Figure 1 (cartoon, rainbow, N blue to C red):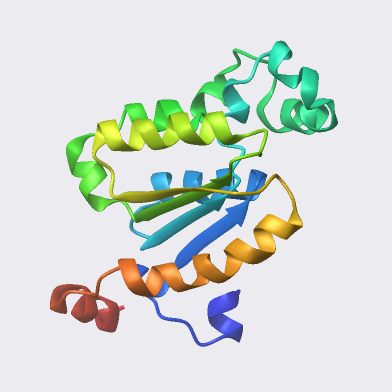
Figure 2: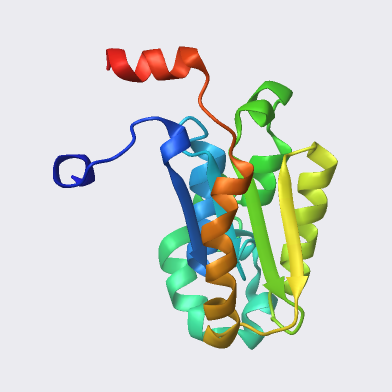
Amino acid sequence: MSRSVFRTIESRYGRGIAGLSMGGYGALKFGLKSPATFAFAGSMSGALAVPSWTEDDYQNLKSIRDSAFSAFGPPGSEARKANDLFEITRSLSNARIASLPYVYLDCGTEDILISDNNRFAALLREKKVAHEFRELPGDHGWAYWNQQVQEVLKLPLENCGQETQEEIAADERG
């Protein structure tokens, strides 16, 4: 729909995706699963490990338990495995890694999700995925996100390269 209403750049270099909390999880998932679509995938305070959480993990997060079960099914389900960012990333081939968008993630040092974000950043380093991870003062709330969204909006321009002549020609051909 957006293409019919708005003037858009058709190549991946005209597209980025970012989100906060569960939206951060979604942005990284789309970036990992659809690298030809995006040049940038960003997450602020991402709920990156929700598909792998157990009942014990929900003890401090009962407010999202029902929605997580609705989206991913019970712990250990196939839907959870298929949507686990850690498993998706571990299974990436070197060729697939080379095609990924630039990945950005940040998380507040007082955020309940900081350890999951640290673990995911460590996995990105291990797999040699081009990324940036920032730990900054703040918690899981709008004061932090309002500050960080300004930074996230600048990052695609700084880190996403340019189209090659072949990609431009392919876009023009349709």
